[in-house]
Image (cartoon, rainbow, N blue to C red; front, side, top):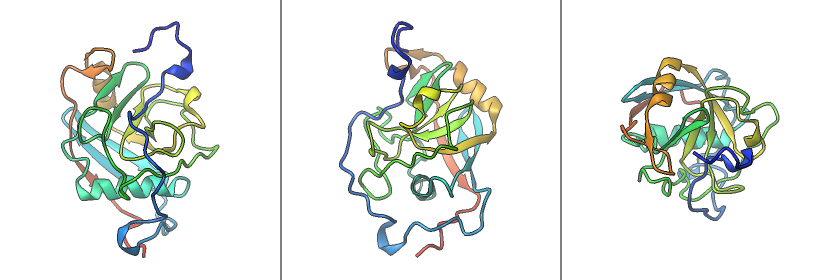
Length: 204
C-alpha cells in the first residue's frame, strides 16, 4: 500500500503494460456493439473461493466494457484467475490470467477505449471498473472498490456494481497481503462466472 504521505492520485489500479488501441467496434466474426436490447438489469455472478459476488452491469452507459467483460466471462477466460492485488480500504484487482498484474487481453486481442460518463463514479463501496495502464488501454483486468475513491473518476471506466455478496467482499478485504504489490497471502480465486443474461449475445 502506498505510504500515507503520497498523494491520493498515486493510489491507482493499473495494469503493467500499455498496448496500442487497435480494437475494432465489436466482436470477432462481425458481431457489433448494440444497445442492451431492453435488458436493464444485466447481471453476472463471480463464484470465488471466498463466496459469490453478484454484479449488475451498466450496459447502456459502458457498452464496450460490458461487452468485453461478458464475452470474456462467457468464454471462461476468467475461470481460475486470481485477485492479485488487495489493498484494504481501497480496492481489490483481478482479471489477469497470469496472476501477475502484467497480463490479460481484451476480447478483441488489443486494448480498447475508455468510456467515461459523469453518472458512473467511484462514489461508494462495490464499484467495478476496468484497470488500465493509461488512457484507452483497457484489456481484461478490473477492480472492485472497498470505499469511495473519487480521485479515480475520469480515469477509469466504471462498468458494474456489486449488488449481492457484500459479506464476500468483506471477507476478501480482510485477507492479509505481502510485499509492495499487496499480493494476498491466501489466493482469492474466481472459480467460474455465471452470466445470467447477455444482451449482446444476439448482436450481429
